[in-house]
Length: 330
Image (cartoon, rainbow, N blue to C red; front, side):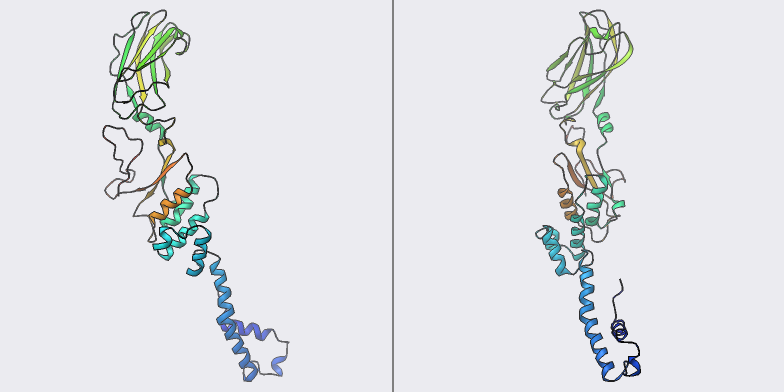
């Protein structure tokens, strides 16, 4: 919006008089003209300036610093680090971020809320989430041996797995995808052994039913617990009636639980020095993410190191652990 100049105001004042007045009184000179000039100057320098400022103050991006203090106070931002130590642009961006808090929790909302604090366009904000399929792959172990090669009523066939992870077994327990050949799945019995000798048994009827030829079924052991997931796991399979064989097997188990784990509910906003603007404020970005955080979510700011590739965000695994989350590096 273009502000009115003194001449604009004078023209408006002069046009407000009845038509034909200029034939009787000198509107552009003399005492009457001088009064119009004076009034126009006063209005332009006071009223017009004040009205223009009201328009500017209606938006945090253009308001005065005095009005910005009011915005910060009304939005509960008076005591934040950004308010106390940030630049004027950073403080404005903080207010814009807070005004965007309302609405459903979506990736678009995360970008909209965080973008002002990083001095970026919302479309350029990168949000990453854990890949559940990739996590499962990382924690799935194929059998290292299949024992005798067959099972019967008395003699079980044992599949061994070597797990290279750490921490206690998660509350999800363990799952085994086992490929079997037998005359009746309903007759099979399975038992999983953790590295400390703890075991859980699946009774007949839980493999399925009917004849199977190299058929893969998933066995669930949600109650298996052990203080450490690392080490040798074993699956024993035998039959209440008949014979068969375990042709292959894959064990899924982890030290960070998927059912109760926060890993699958994490997300992170990438801070790339090549993309953020000059008024970037990482502290404000962290505060903004905290403001929209659900109780079931974990979030964080992840620094993109210039030493790493564009999709490598510097996961530093704990000793012996297969990482589900990461420690961001600067």
